[in-house]
Image (cartoon, rainbow, N blue to C red):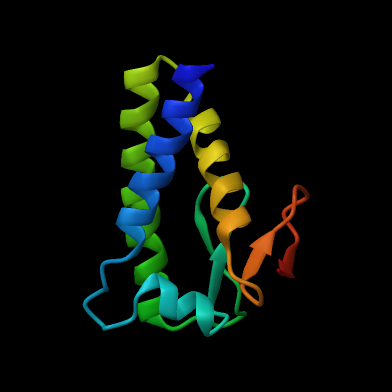
Length: 114
């Protein structure tokens, strides 16, 4: 149980740290979330909410998700668990911490405002 708690905490800390740096365009994850452009998904990754995203939004999502994938892989290797399990735990925590009005997916993958 302690190992799982450490894994969850580590995943959350790494994902939170990776989410804050700004992209080259000046658009950052928190800003994109507050503008309703992107949201958190149950699989632990960021998704695009808008129908016609701009190039900076697409680049931001790709960048954040690549960093998250690397962090999840590292955590999974250290703890001898599946990457998908680490990502799902992080996704649940990120959705839980999402601010009111931000977009998140439910278990069926449907976007909804929190």
